[in-house]
Image (tube, rainbow over all chains, first blue to last red; front, side):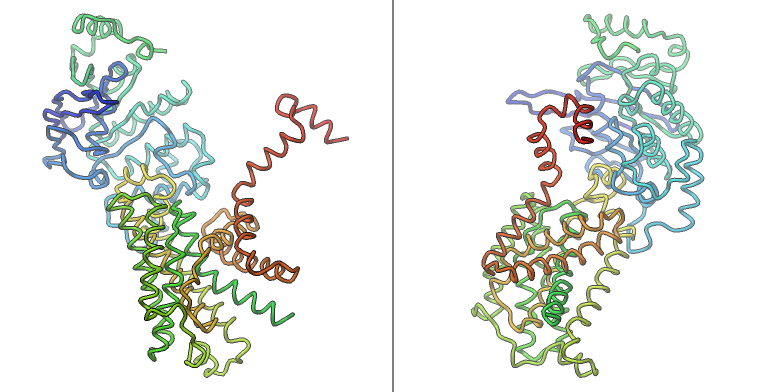
Length: 263
Length: 308
């Protein structure tokens, strides 16, 4: 489904150059749910942003569903990629209503024209989908999204990212800004949506326990490279401590445990 | 007095179309668009030259609208394609338009329209009194403009445009081209401004190269007055607010002149009005701090004081 081939991205930072992606290779099979871990500055977000097309890469190719999207602009790729961001404010428009936000999400793979933004049929669909979130949002269609809590906004963003089935779902620490209880709910919801629609997913997390518990494959990044790729029985027997040990062994240095340790 | 008030209403409505344009850029796109100071006199110039050349008055309005749209397109292209800042793009277009407007008017700074048949002569020909013709024409144009804008802002394209001003990152992640939206919004906004200019030229009986000075500020004043009065929660209310705000703004000017303010001081008054309206919240907190500096720490105490 997704082929990332020799991806290189360098950022200029005050005269010096930082290599954020050092020739990454990664292939995702359809339906694979991959969790991505690594210390701060490992290049996790850069990888997701490169795939989403936020910036141009310096070398390498990105193939999604047999199409080379390496040089396509961000909005072009969006028709086949769903995204949820770390900041709940990023994924929704605060001054627009819940139904208007959802309408923008369902019109993402059509050419937006002068037709009505929200039709009765859409409204029915929105209610159905919102009911599944179990947050009571189905009765608040015409309320502004700015009135919702961070968790509600993130749940809505998740719904918006998947309401038109994406070929690839990119989750960039999308529960990191939420309180633990809400984070757990959003994560369960994520797992449910991914399972039900069999979505091919890349999820960044700083929680190693989550990284092993959710999805069916885990990759560890360090200094712009993938240093560990776990799936199948080998992954099933992995513990958080094993991950930390592995990292120390491969790199010969202590893992930046500050954010990596599970809460 | 009655006639004077009617005149104020007429002005409020005809400039209300301009305020709708400012609403699009200022509130929908969150784009400070100074093109308005150039596209407004451009609409006036184009309509005036059309009338002088014997073009149908209604057709001159179409020309004025298209001229405004073209001006907006220039600003939009400068900003989205050449990556010039939004504020500077508008200033550049506005400055260039000053020369272009003079060219349109054949090098003359003023085109009088006293002896040519205009829109209102046609309407009077339909059996409407000369006194009521302008206000009726402007009510119709304003209403149609407002309703068309409401409809557009609820279409798929309009929702995408609103999302552009609200959260660009979000719209891009949902497949929207924010550059196209900004370009299109600027075109639409300045089309309204150009139309307003074309109507004003026919209403005042002349076009003038200096007609646009301070136009954006009076447009902002109208939008903000509307917001303060209506506190709109929806687009439909906000567009109504822009038109009503424009009428109230002209009323304020009318009263200010009656009270004895020199016409030359109006721009200063408008600027001060906008400063106060935009900084209202900040000024309020500042004022409260000056009056009771301890309020932040002793909130309960100050409530007691207020009760006494």
